[in-house]
Image (cartoon, rainbow, N blue to C red; front, top):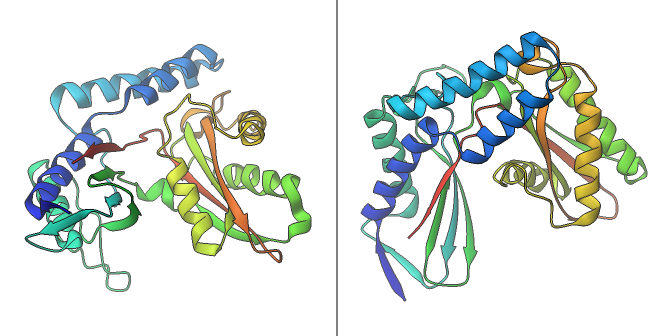
Length: 279
């Protein structure tokens, strides 16, 4: 059994909150530059150039990429041979979020659903814990903005809907979202499992490196096909028209019940932010 003090987790989460909000990943920048080469609309190209410049300024000046610094979503891979000491895992993570959002001057966006009273420190975080073999802890902080999250949906299709029914739901969701999720987007799709698992699969799919291929050849083919259909919508960067509406479609899938076909779409804005560390 390996002991990890909760203070290490707090410190790691604090740093990840700030870095995720200020340092756009190299894979996302490459995808934006590729989109710039493909975009035919002068207005769309101008927007993409500004998004790339904005990301570089944010990194150089250590300021947020976007004013919406998001809900702190934290994925934890917790080794089964690890014992957290000092405080609970949840307390350690929330303290890290609290410190990171204060020290990084990141906007606090979390409030009571009814009164809309702000919690004041961007907590509580949304924490997903997976128990894995080993004696290490992997932390992934993925801030999620409200604009893109609001455009996400879960549906329970009939099994007869099949692949074409899923494609129709995904493309329609992007079309109906229009400019609201700040395109160019990444479209995360979760298929199978249960109602809540489909949504989690869709969100986890957004953590995959942009430009990487799906390990499942069938899903790899569908990702390319659905991305083409989405970009044929003509929504374009920031919804002002153009060729590049989305940078990628990422699909995660698992078996489901014989009576169900759960499908979730979790849309990510152009500020696809996530950072990780292993303790």
